[in-house]
Length: 112
Image (cartoon, one colour):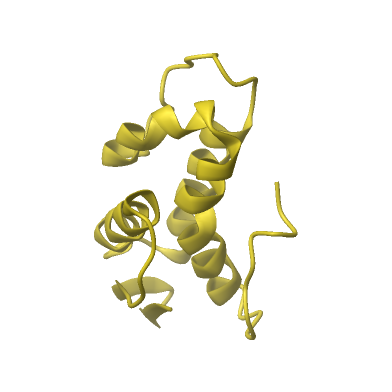
């Protein structure tokens, strides 16, 4: 589960609860650290930068991490393993849906 406290268009607090592989847990932890104090627009921009960084291009390519993703660049190696991309992005898809107030259960089975 991802918990966001948004007030005045700013992510005041972010946390996650759950278990999963090391990649999933690390990504969720980094996400909560990075999002605190960011505007909703900044959070969405970071989501798109990170998602595109992991999913654009071909496995084996080693693009430079985009400016603005900070410590998330450490997860760039998962590009080599598409199933691990899903691990790294699951919490991000959940956060994205929460910011859009989509509600319900979020799955990364329907996303690239």
